[in-house]
Structure formats: C-alpha cells, structure tokens
Image (cartoon, rainbow, N blue to C red; front, side, top):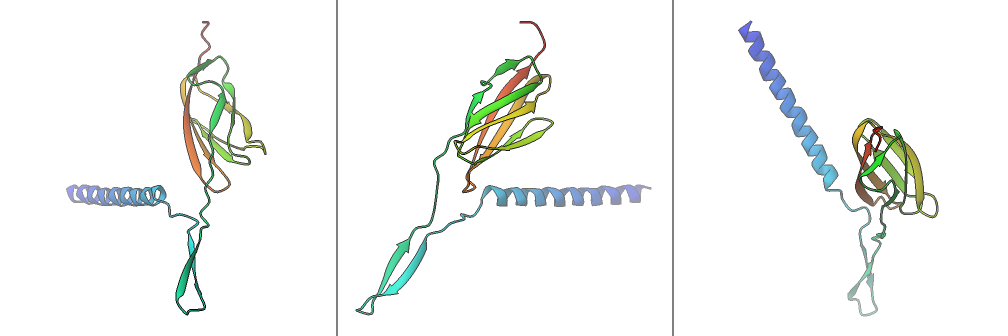
Amino acid sequence: MLKELLTALILGALLGFGLTGGYYAYKKNQSNPQPKNLTQITVTPNPSNSPQLTPEPTLTTSNFELSIDEPLPDAIVSNSKVTLKGSFAPQGFIIINTLNNTYSTTADNAGNFSIDIEVDSGANIIKIDAFDKNDNQISSELTITYSTAKI
C-alpha cells in the first residue's frame, strides 16, 4: 500500500509540474507577441552599380483610448443589471469580464458602445479589454458595488 501511495504522489507531482510549466511557457509566449508588421527594406540597383537601400515602413499604429462613461468608477447600484457605456476606436471589439460572466460587444462607427451586464451582490471588479482593427489592446478595470440597502 505504501508503494502505491508513493507512486501516486510521484506521478501526481510530475503531472502537476508538467502542466504548470506548460502553462507558464504558454503565458510567456502570449506576453511577448511578435510584431505583426515589420519594416520592409528593398534593395534597388542604381546606374553606378552600387546598391541603394530604400526603406518602406509598413508598421501601423493607432492612437486610441478606452473611456467608460457609465457607470462611474466605484459606483453603488441598486439593480443587478447594469448598462456599461463608453467609447473606443471605431469598430473596436470590447470584452467585459465579471466574476461569473463574459460579455462582448463592438463599438459603432463613431466608437461608442453600450452593453447590459449582470453584477453580483457586493463589490464587483469588472475587467474590460478592448481591441482595435490593428489588434492593439488596451485594458481597464472598474469596480461596481451592488447593494439593495436603503441609503
């Protein structure tokens, strides 16, 4: 019986370390993404037969900001359904994570978005991730407290 217990412990530890190592390797690759668009350099000969380098930049960036207009940070609400309103890059993709649910929406052509979410009783930390058309990401957190107590 002791032999089986020891074998089970060793196999469990090896499996746990293997899964943990794989998870950390995956997260490390996710946190260091490779750039999608690189600067391309074209070599063209000139009449004097000496090469001339002509850079053609193709790296695109966009200036964007995620703004949450409603509800205000640290708001206290008396209803479990909350409408989250804000603005982001036009046609940007927004993902909202609560403790129990994940919601997604897309900003309109003006960059505005609105989505109804459900919050739990007490303090709720809402994590908002937004992606523009170039896959640039911005994140934000919002705390909303749901209480039915009379104030």
